[in-house]
Amino acid sequence: MQAGARTLAWGTSPLLMGIVNVTPDSFSDGGRYAEPRAAVDRALELVADGADLLDVGGESTRPGAAAVSAREELERVVPVLRLLRPLTEVPISIDTTKAEVARAALDLGCDLVNDVSGLRFDAGMLPLLAGARCGVVLMHMLGEPRTMQVAPRYDDVVAEVGAWLSDRLGELAVGGIEPARVVLDPGIGFGKRHEDNLALLRALPRLRARDRPLLVGASRKAFLGRILAEPEPERRIEGDLAVAAWCRAAGVEILRVHDVRAAARFFRTLETLSEA
Ligand code: HH2
Image (cartoon, rainbow, N blue to C red):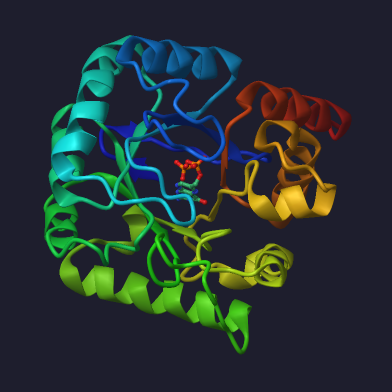
């Protein structure tokens, strides 16, 4: 699919979206890359490790995280994007729910906007993206990060998330964002109980509306901590790789991961084994 000036081409394994958190309070790598130069070095390391895309974010969305102002988010991500854009040709996505941040990122050459609110939090986001050529990651979240894990409830999580993605895709189309530019994401961990996350991962093919590509972001998340009885997010790699194999078998197009090197080597091995 076309995403801004760049093209995403699907293969037998999902494309790897490497996570670049420019936040002091990310749940998984808390503040390590908050300095622009360090974030750029990390991004280039992810590309060398095999990242097919980069997702740059300046606001933590972990459960309970406090919102940051647009100004603060801009101060975090703009220096990184300005330095990074000329240094790599891989598509860059901006992880933001704010139209002002998305606009600045698109002006600096970002190719996709990854809005975990499903373009709900900022009324300016839909018209902005309608007037752009960028790719759009449309993710399902119940509520908002501050409260989403308080008491999430579904009668049938797969049917409800699937219907929401499909309906929202239609609303985006009415607003001027063609479905051909949109990637769908069930939003693992965003207003979901443990069993909801598992049900969604078990039913991935059912979440695909209008043949659009699927993105899964499960890397280091709490449900893996629970399965593995592992409190340290950075020590959940076995869970990440199991999810990677699972998503590959389910035909997922993009996997959002922290440890790109491990995932790339894992897929390279699987691909070599499956060559006829
Ligand atoms: N998960 C996180 C952030 N952005 N975007 C999409 N499309 N899908 C996801 O599952 C997703 C996302 C949370 O992970 P992380 O960026 O590691 O942590 P933080 O929220 O602290 O930035």
